[in-house]
Length: 306
Image 1 (cartoon, helix red, strand yellow):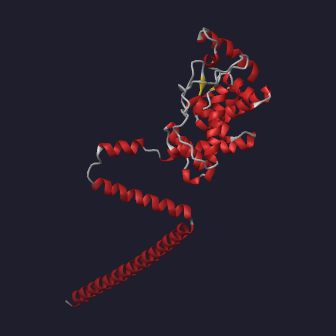
Image 2 (tube, one colour):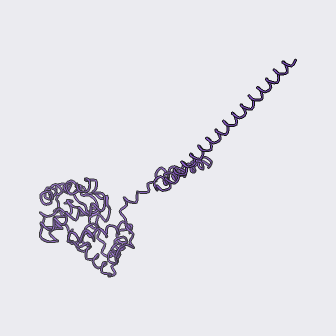
Image 3 (tube, one colour):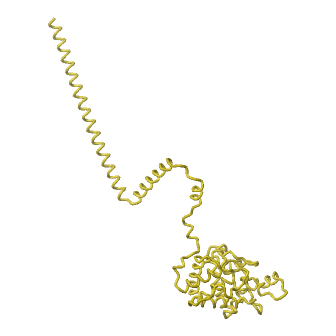
């Protein structure tokens, strides 16, 4: 019996020792895991703080993060919002915020007094919007100064040639504001990207001024240069083209000088484009078919202006 009690006692001791050892082991493991987890979380926190500080110091990364967050919030909002109406979707698809860059227009308030007087008068006289006319007036002053031509002369030619219609075209191919023969002067349009630039108002004005300057230089006088410009250089008369241009210029000079000139007084009746570059029917002799006159004048333009 004594031996049995000793055996039982020994077994209890072994069991208690094993339990105590296991408890100590598990406690140590748990404490170790807690320490490792704590240190790992601290390290991750430090990494996160460092990443935030680095991103905050970079404007591009900060902007990208803000944009991404805003997009996410907007997407969430749109997902909860009511369906967008079809007309709003179409408007968004057709929108083009940069389209303003293509517009040929200026605020009339940006013009000086002379230019503003002329722009307002031309706007009323030819029933065109003041903003695009203001841009053309500015351009006429700028280009005229560089070319040594009176800006009112440039504007007068545009008025007589096209009545400020940038898409005007004559029967023989004179195009745009100043009714330049595009095919004859295609070399001049190369600097502007090609012949389609003839329908850009500013480009047409610049090319037209080059042609006009060349005509005056070769003819030796303004009046004779205007005859060449309209394609009547080999005719005794130009159908009154030069007088119409000079009369319009005289009115523009008076307006620029601050004089009151009625926009409706002495309004020159021109079927646009009535006196176009190369449109020889204006100066065709009585009884001469218009087509024959055109054929006679186009070679003259090519010889004189190219």
